Image 1 (cartoon, rainbow, N blue to C red):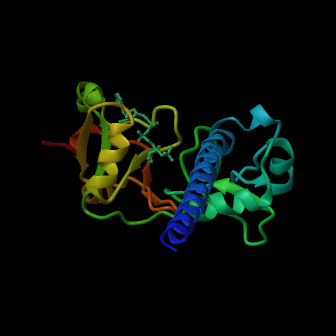
Image 2: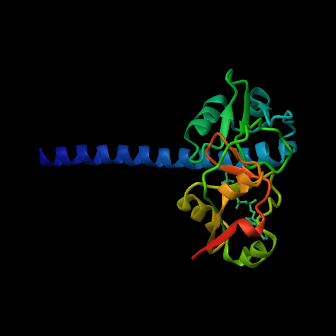
Length: 202
Ligand code: HQG
């Protein structure tokens, strides 16, 4: 009896493990696919031979055709579960686009918004001297990316090395006429941040 029970438990565990492995694998496949989508929808649609319209939309059917292994189910799962909500479908699900982060010129039709008094920018320590001299520049992207919380800025900074956080006096910038936009996934965007609006966070 005991042996039977034990065997049963082992079987259950084995089944559970199997599921875990499957889930892990699926998770990895989805993450890798999401990264690839980011490359296509923000930077280089031409690598799979598609074009984005002026608002950054790609045709879903076309995209699925051009990306090996991609289907609507996977795409829906990525849009729903992506940790940064990087992508959106159009209302009829025929189009998909990245919510922000583009290096190619697209008009996301974002409305100008009044930012909070303070925003944060996470970068790497080694860029600090240059940023203090030149301010924040958009570099290869369409906008400088800012967050309303330190944790996000720290994560963004760590992507580049030892994180360094700058506090952005966005309230003052807004009064001085600088435009701010808020992406549908919660990223604050602006063209540039002159050095006089920056404070180092120690
Ligand atoms: C730095 C990720 C020297 C800037 C994140 C940054 C974000 C300067 C780097 C999004 C500078 C550009 C964007 C200056 C700015 N001198 N360095 N004057 N001005 N820089 O990747 O903000 O995961 O283009 O500080 O979460 O790091 O892709 O920008 O370190 O939201 O969805 O130049 O990308 O989102 O790097 O990241 P990036 P970012 P995803």
